[in-house]
Image 1 (spheres, one colour):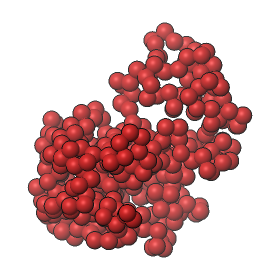
Image 2 (cartoon, rainbow, N blue to C red; image 1 turned 135 degrees about the vertical axis):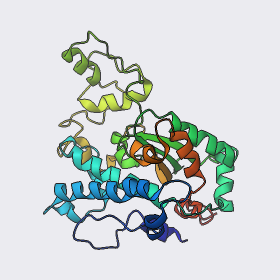
Image 3 (cartoon, rainbow, N blue to C red; image 1 turned 30 degrees about the vertical axis):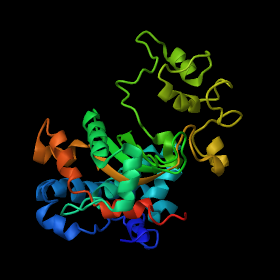
Image 4 (cartoon, rainbow, N blue to C red; image 1 turned 90 degrees about the vertical axis):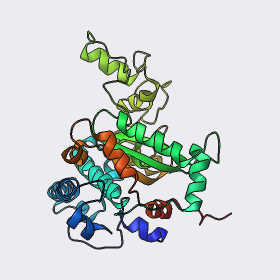
Length: 318
């Protein structure tokens, strides 16, 4: 399978369409008849793909009807509206549709071996395929609530340049694309240490999030997001909004300076593989407490040829 073919599975920019539609899957006809063998029954497949994806595109069509976004691919909508709270619904439906599409394009009716060039990169990044499986499934199983777990290729390396693959988690409809890192949603906000206390007034909360009181959320992972909520303290981890009309919306620094699309701390990544932890995917077949069993069954039906084609490994210039 060629790299270009794999890309068009979830970013069909070459196709003209009058409205957003449910994309065709390579194994769609087979999945419609028998489900994803060993993973999803026909009824579960209908719920998780056919009905859910139709619901998402119907929402997108209502939100983009008679606008310039009517024919815009979902990935482009995700990147365009990641920092615009006035179009939060449009972002959420576009991102969910895009994520769910990638999820289903990486499943196959039968088990597929990992191509050698990809396996070599997995060994370099995780020590072995078994280790990747262990870490990936543990991350997905531990997520409390809906979201996605991703295998991504890093295009910039900080410590060991041989470790090109990473695991990322996004909650709800969060997106791991570099241009949408402001809507990454990488945390379970029920467990993150935000620094918010029960007796904190709305004014004190606003001042803390803007950095005006000289403090920031206690959880280091939240600080890049906190500084994007107001003009803030100039000593904050990021001052991208300093001297602008805020950091969100059409008059924000990012909107006025498209070259600054990547969020503070955002990593340049390419998406290779994803699993959905949304309960509507696995609850019908596996019941409460059955997520781990679903994840193990899903792993056995990953289409590693698609993952390999997306990675570009083995095709890079030496």
